[in-house]
Length: 462
Image (cartoon, rainbow, N blue to C red; front, side, top):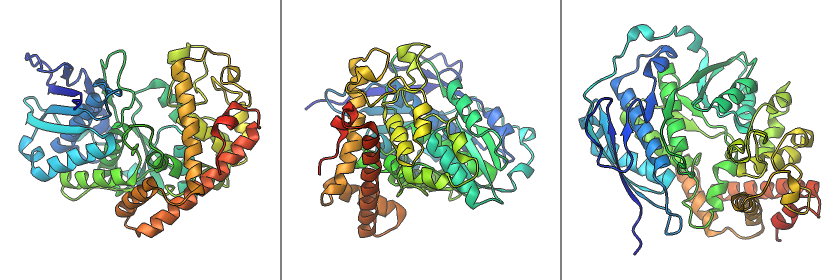
């Protein structure tokens, strides 16, 4: 029997002279950087010690997930052991909180987590004088986690069109300067949107952090929920489309744990955890577009005045090609999962002109080879990512051509339980979703033409 990778990480306070009994030293304010004064200045409600503990827990989880490498040749899962200093270890070691926390992390990451809590010796001072004026929050009715992507912006446009007399609080974790700039450009001029950035950053992760980082949205959505609580708002609205929400679970890749970054099963579990942490006062997570394709979301959002021009300022690439291809490379690769879904959806929605004018490392997908699609060298990793994502789009489309598969029945059961709907209803909604995805994908392949290597690889088998 192959043993899973194990890691023991002790989060230490600043100035703690002990050497951690771990391969990965982690120190507050060095490896986990949290500016609680900056957060406090953004909200009218005073942060509590439990709020600060939560942010420490979230930071420790994100750090651990990124620094501990998976051994993909032997399996997916890892055994992760954490020791975290908090202000009230008795509170955090309650059985119901421990169970909810480890369950939530297992759902989203596929790992086994064991978390112990020690007493924080040096508490951060909480300053009531830093609280901001509550008046700007009077009209805010929901928090929207905003990544600078096309879904975030289109969802924001749809929400504000439907709710013209209400305001949103757009929450970001702008730890990356490039992403922060995309966020600012894409929402410039919005009158009914307040913007807050939660400064929570992981430092000294090494040269090769774990790329899967499945707890990314645990970090993002937990901070969004905290922002909602501090703003006195009861809703966190997640604008991900159905292909991004359910598609990765419907078409898992190899031995990978089902990708549940925005899955309602995960957000329902996170909500249960936060209700325990805040003793019943936790915002709900909503998924208004989880049964629609990205193409359908774009078509609906395009009806709002001046919506389409702002889409050009968003970015969907998950790879950051300038790190791999040099500073002269475009900011988007064109072939990762985010790029492929973006490009195909824009074309299928009737906005091929936007896709045509965008810059990608591999721009011309009508060519007969991957090498001919761009001017940059193609590595084995580039090729693997491209093939994996194109086959993923194809396999998701092919689900609509056959009776419900085991993955469809499983995902339908998870979604039905999380959303409180009938299982048969969930199966029907998934069938409609993947059927529309097949239509959208075929429109894109027709656009590329029969000689395209993407068409040859991604053509749907009837």
